Length: 280
Image 1 (cartoon, rainbow, N blue to C red):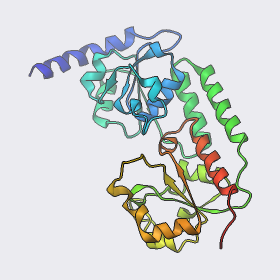
Image 2 (image 1 turned 90 degrees about the vertical axis):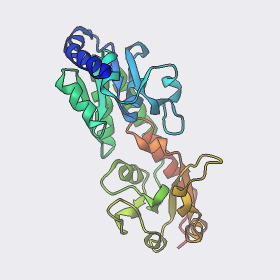
Image 3 (image 1 turned 180 degrees about the vertical axis):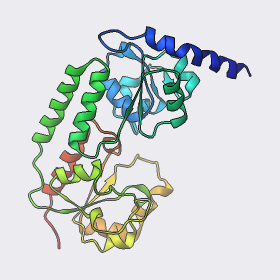
Image 4 (image 1 turned 90 degrees about the horizontal axis):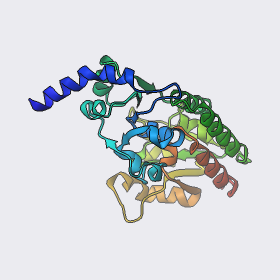
């Protein structure tokens, strides 16, 4: 009952708090509600603007901004946690806790919901969108310029090798998404566009084995951290595929969110492709 009363009071005060906070130079109390928002906020905002990030931001296994997140308050995405922080801007993702996002919107807390970019132009647009919302447009332009410079330094694959991304539990990157755009930016052919996938986006091992793959892309695994999700990668058929072609491991954190780090995926794919010739 006490928690319900406290939440009711917070929700009553939230609109006034949101109106009172913020300046012409941008919001002063920003709360980020998902990892991808964390990464852009921590790269673009002044540290003093950031009221809280998610618990995921500080985990170096999945976050590219773990160092920047150190020492900042964190939330679990609960409405009462966020309202109590008196945010003048909350940045959420398209699939962030919908109940919390809905409650915040209803009580007048400014919420920016980020979409899921499907290509590099979408990444650039999202960087600029967040930078503008933070009052840091010049930093957004600098980040886009750095992204473009890194991409321009990449030598795409000299031959259109056939690449297949095989993540834990046989998930791949579907055609039409950002992962597919990164594979193609490296000058590679995304084999997942040709072979069958089930409705969850998983590739049957049989289909992968018959796909005449030149390059297999896997997640860079943590040492001494085996999991059932990686069992497929130990299958004799998959091992044989790796011996026949070339396997390149890329940290999952470079693929997870749209940001300047995606250029590193393109660079590593292109380098791996240019280091080998097709064996077929």
